[in-house]
Image: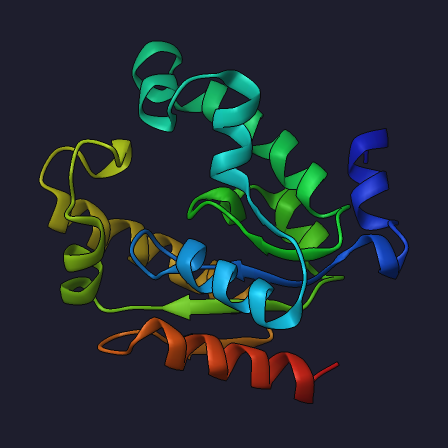
Length: 182
């Protein structure tokens, strides 16, 4: 474990998020994360937004110009930073595939926001801004979920189904979970 990894894993509880949201594209991690953070009176961090802020380019541009490995390095740095902040954190959909991140999440309250493909398609539109879903997005999303679902389930303490539900209802369930599992 390098120094940065150790700092995320060993951060005092007051310097750690109260909740980390994981799930596939279109599950509502950013939307629900913002709502939950607001309800709890806490700051919100989105690792994709952190990458964009740090690099100055969109996630899609990073993928196209530099490739996925460069994006994943930037994403890993954002995850380490986010896991050392108080508040609510939303991880990018693929961040959990890094074994180091999986290990770091063992010390956090993680909620898997699950969604069906029909709802995900309506939320993200399977457009070009999702680089891993740019060619045959439905098949790619299904393949991503087949690969990632076991990891989402393994790193999380709870699963919340977002399919067909309003963001406020989902946020209420997540907040209830946080309160009852403190």
